[in-house]
Length: 158
Image (cartoon, rainbow, N blue to C red; front, side):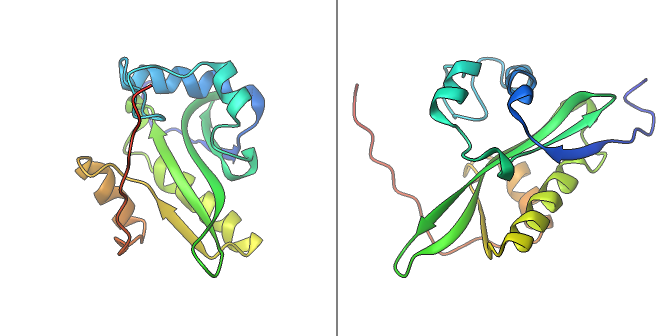
């Protein structure tokens, strides 16, 4: 099927069998600089399994066309501030460039939002690199607003 043809896609929860396809898509897009980690070293399947990267798989979704993963959203549940607030953190949204512009990213976000709403998770936060204006625009179109929280990082030389 040509990527210009109208294709139907399925959104479903990610499972362990999807990890290889997710990493392959990250490698296809990143060209040596992982989208998922924002680092030059690429993740391996074992890294994800060992670290439970992305947290519980029930907060991660994949989009597939003809049983091929063409997009994913990775997020995790955490508790922030006092009083503790349950927050779903979106860590990455990726759509295969060959399939962008078909509503896949929007449907991935919608699936996560529907799941969080059903589970009583009322705050969803998207982590977006400051320099990624395209992703910032996409997130804003999905109804997210820039928050008043600023991240400050301190890194140690290893």
